[in-house]
Length: 187
Image (cartoon, rainbow, N blue to C red; front, side, top):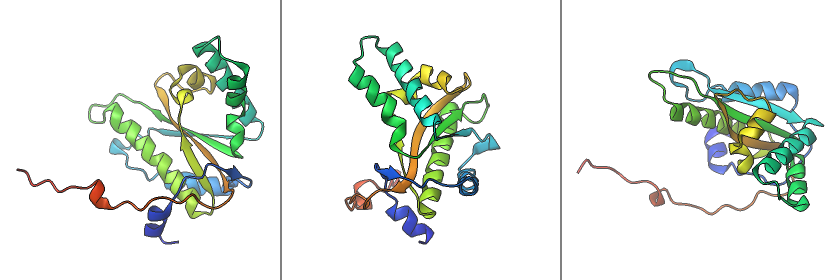
């Protein structure tokens, strides 16, 4: 698949199964992610790979954080949180390390980390894998961030669920660029 076709056809996959990328393939994926736009070469992105039993431990981090948010939460909801990381054979927790810089505001660093996350998704797709970017309440919960060892100046950009697509890609509607592009004339 050529690069333009990859960009035009990439599609999130909510159903994922084994296999996930190998260690050597992850190196290729992170090399691609490292080419994200990066003003002042801050490299504000971090990737934490979660696989095997660590996925169940991440589920427990989700449960404990949910209990801190709402001590009256039901067991069914807690069980849902416990199982979330088990929906894919691998997860990547993508974060932004926000650094003080006179020319690179925090928002630009977050966007850069988001670009690195998307580059990882594109690399996965190019290698025959699939993924889906998820956030939800856990992504914005400091208890989750602390539970997985993020620094005080680090925040979650998203959870990338990764594996092999289970089934056919979902059909996506064709969208004309005219729906979201306009020409500014300065008038």
